[in-house]
Image (cartoon, rainbow, N blue to C red; front, side, top):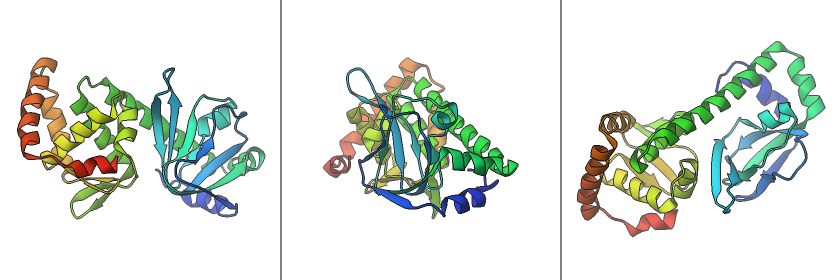
Length: 249
């Protein structure tokens, strides 16, 4: 997020009363009216998703601290068939349409930050489309982890912690995979020593190595790539398996 006028936005919302939402609580429903408020996340994370005809969840985007939603619906004054759900206990502040519009019109720098924030949302969606372009489950999962590291990653002792309580199911729902397939690929990455899991937080042990593995493997044809992944996975899964991981998803 650009720090263009972040202090101004943060200071503006500091004057509003905070509201707490519990993990799993729906903040915005698709059947509600055109959004009349803009929501600012003071603490926690929110996921945005829609439901397919069969009732399966399809996750669109995650929002974290200091981010706002639903910017697109708010400014276009339209409803969308999507849910906004708390991924953990979150603290949110919200401002009404008229007062928020008055605020951003009061200083061109505020308007520029809104444009910057909306551009960042567009970039996130573009990255998700890139992730979906991969044909193999392994590359989809690796690409998604790299994308999440760019948004929510925090470096610590040479590692990158994904500072968002994302589950295997959450990851699966963003890249059109089943939870079981996603878990298998994550176990494979753990066996290779590329990632570890600490509770619901995924830690990338070597981001550059993870990025390199994606570039190298994707150079092969889909058939050769699939065979290589199958062979390597069989070797690692014979030596690495942990039932503990299933209690975390």
